Image (cartoon, rainbow, N blue to C red; front, top):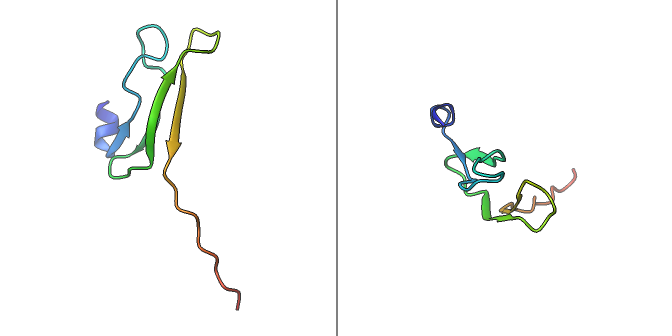
Length: 66
């Protein structure tokens, strides 16, 4: 995680996604609140948990043509 800290990045997945290991990452810049509602779900028939999340994004404004 030191490499992430050096570049002001944040790893959002904080629970194991396969057995006892975190192998699926969601990485953003530390100062953004782009990612929210992170959910790990093991309803799939797999040895990995699905990582579900929402993104906070603004709709781009229309630019008037000249």
